[in-house]
Amino acid sequence: MACFILPVTPGYLDVEVGYCIMEDGTGFVANLTKMPGVTVEMFDWWFAWHGLDNLRYTIWNPEDHYKAESMQKKRTLDSDLNLREKYWDTSHEVVEDIGMGPEDIVINFKYPGDLGFDMSRFGTKDCGTIICAKGNGKGHPPFASPDTIMCHFIREIDGGVELRTRFWMGWTVEDGKDVKALPDWARMPAMGPMTLLLHNIKEFTNLAVLLPKIYAEEKDNFY
Image 1: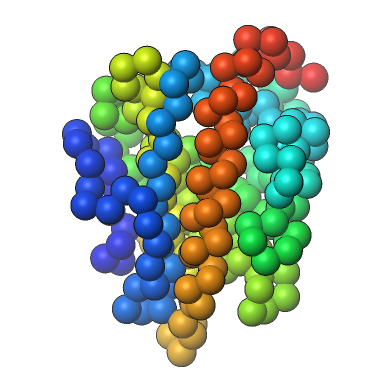
Image 2: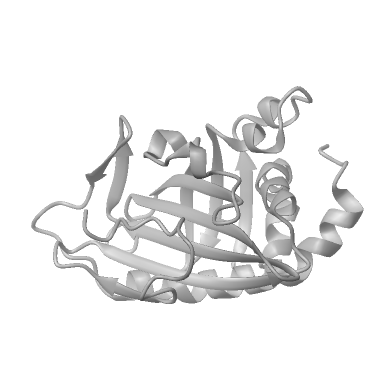
């Protein structure tokens, strides 16, 4: 798919913040968030940690986040796994409002290699970590979120990290290949990617402020 451009190279792409409806009717969202005082490890830790207690998700964005519960808590609590392995191949049952009312969503976090990423570039100066997931909305059309591929690319900058987020709405991944999930006759309304972008700006601006403080207090508390 033409919009599936992976920002794991030096510099920036032409569009780092914005949204659009593609010619095939699917949606695309890009966002860039500077996160001073945040490290790559903190970001991986957050995605392993917050699914263990719904309050942790609510702290992230009290107005829009209601619930995020890991369906594989035993894996997250396995002390033999590193931070990334704790959330790879786990699913979170989420309730959140991305602009059109509270919605049930299942987010399945994936090993980046299963989405086609070159893992030799993982952990370099151009890509400290990648949080990858497939999302599936459980609401009622036309307001249900479509199948979506989500990627959060983190790389180190002076004084912290920067987060480069991409959403491909109306797409999923099967056997390591991107597959259009939106029917060919359908066209996503622009309201979908627009509200998702605004939600993403809000939640990660919040997290940029909160994460260093929460990590300092809770980094060893996985229970």
